[in-house]
Length: 258
Image 1: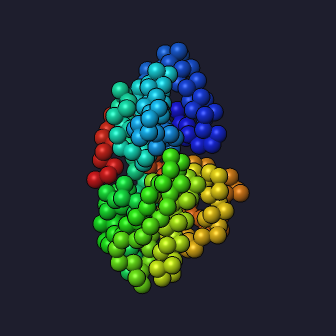
Image 2: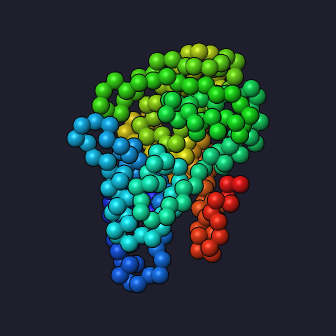
Image 3: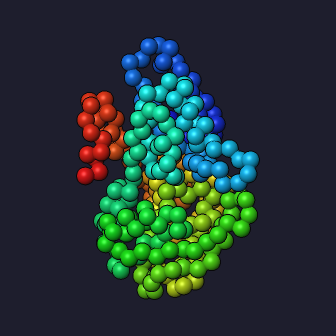
């Protein structure tokens, strides 16, 4: 069953539950839930008093509805895999994104992590590109999702910059980072991510930002009004197709990343 948790999120989640329950009651031998974008990924821990851990709740509900296995891509937090009591195959679109930028043959590029929490993944991305790494220092002053950019750490002068993240939601972090890099003299700025959520003011923020190109994948279907002129959408369908084939033929999914 293939279902991405894009907008309207709760409707798509409920549709998946109903489909899983239908297949379970029809005595399906094995049910694999293919979820390219797993919503509520940011609610993976209790970081404030009296808040839910919705990602864990969602994992429990998917299992209860009838899924025997989950196939997903670039979870916001890796520990979400541990929320499931069934096998989880966690794919990554980074190889697709890296291949795209390698074929562009950019000169003197630097990879920029939008925050320290994404540092490890950004470092792996930079190593594959053979590029140095820089960081955006930011903080979230309140309990909402708004972030305040403070400074950039690393040598970015006279380089092309690639801002890498797992998702672009309201685009506050990525556009703030882009403006900071622009003010520091970076003229060629790219942004890339796996999941193009593009909620709320995201499209307008991206349209008015100094980003040269925005590279995303098709884990979320974008309507025409969200397809900006400088937006490039890469397909991860072949990666999912290969993983599904390997799962159902009993082959190793991990071999995809060797």
